[in-house]
Length: 302
Image (cartoon, rainbow, N blue to C red; front, side, top):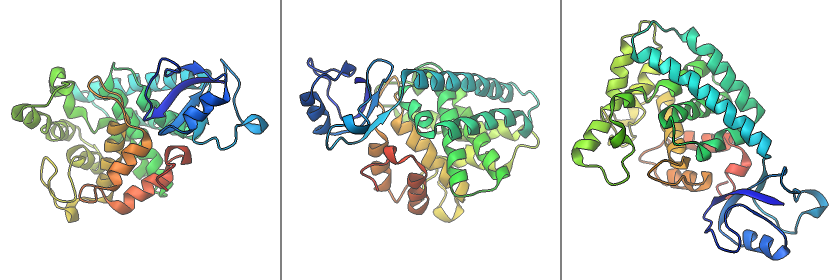
């Protein structure tokens, strides 16, 4: 079989590397005994190991053909372009309605139905280009999926997806060199970044008919249950369910995404870290989020 990519704590080596053909049981033993969370097998370049040919004790191995991944990547690029256009319309003051987002929301919904785990997993393989737009799209997809999993009504789910697309719109007014800085931020730079929820909220307020849920999530997705979030230092009793959901989806995607200044964590690493922070996340909602994900993404958590 041909290993296309490995997720988790894997150290490239001169003998295996990160993309390679498995030719022996010894190589499979190395994979099984390492601290990894998933393997992507490219069946277009080699045989899968499912069925009777599977080695005894094989663990955490998921399959995704090259064609599947390319198709998904193409969908995400196309959707990111649409999201970028809608975001720019808002920034430039063009009249915009909830209905303008409906085709994109429907397209994201269909993509999530076709292959939610691969679609969400692509966040770790994204291009450095248009990172803000792709992040916004990924958060929108996560929020749509999360809302459906806890059986929210269709209008709320549409607004959740719309909020995901627009939640970081204020970042477009922050210099790129600060957003993508690889080293520690200065106090002034951190203060500037923490202005993006308020800036985005003010921008959205200028559009009549903007749903309150979208406005609330844009302004408050960085608030924390312990009152140490920003921009308003809100206490837990003032943070609504949908905003708490947005915080979970936003942080999960940020942690699992590769950025110019960091490597993405595995799903399991991100969820384990989040579950230890009850002061930041709603524990009940976070467990509901975990249960909404593909089991391959949560092995070792449940």
